[in-house]
Amino acid sequence: MEVILLEKVEGVGDRGQQVKVERGYARNYLLPRKLALEATGAGARQFQEHERVRAQREDKLRIDAVKRAEKLNKLTIHMKVQAGDDGKLFGSVTSNDIATAIGAEGHTIDKRTVDLAEPLRELGVYHVPIKIFKDVEAKVRVLVTKD
Image (tube, rainbow, N blue to C red):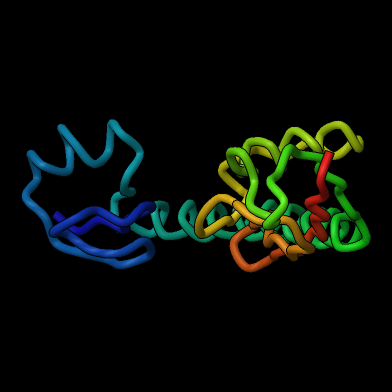
């Protein structure tokens, strides 16, 4: 049976590919889970409509993400923490701390979008990347100062 994949299916193919699979696999697994459509004329038209709607939705999300990134690029967060005389922090500033501080400024973000390689452990100025969308990223300026 020929099907058009709506999602990437491991061992079968990528989204948008037309592949030949066993009838039972398609009928019992791919079609009920909406992972594929039958590769008939109606299925192809339905796939094209599905892709058009998905592209429109993704474009709208990308435009919103660019607007949010512009606002976040202008944002400066002040983190007052306890530190020793040598500039080392008693603890660290984590992505959760940064996300909470950004939330206090009126911007809602998830802590998983804060792209910190490792927690901040010294006083200073940092430019922390925030992943907003697939290819849209903002850099928030974080000032870590002594309390």
